[in-house]
Length: 197
Image (cartoon, rainbow, N blue to C red):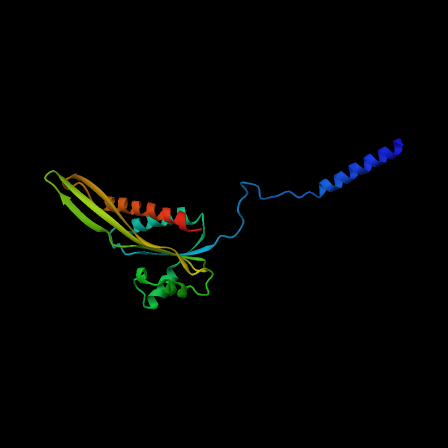
């Protein structure tokens, strides 16, 4: 009888060892890097501000796009799509229909189109007896299109004002323009966070 119990316990231990060896653990634990491929976004940016400091404006905007878009999607340059739209007679892309824009990426491996344009700053001076004030307004139309589903995720325009004042002659366009652009980018980033999957 004792021999039978020992054999039964031994068999049970062996069986539990085999079963334990077949257990598969879920490897999708929190903190594991996401290995799924990112969706592709074609970024079309046009700077029509025509300032003497366009290169610095472009650098600021590019840095912002890197910060807010690259963690979410694979960003592709959209320069060729801007050129294709221009060849199709669409020079002012802000007035282009969604169908026109989608037609230039037909057959391309692109999930989203993101179009942004920095338009000329609107400048106003305010002079009093003691101070010189300057207002700069940044205007930036934005279009975000879901190509696969043929829908707008966002189609609008940001218009942001910045002001500064000082003693006569102590202020320039550039610093105020950068403030206005920074306000615009903050609003744009909120839209990206809310609308872009």
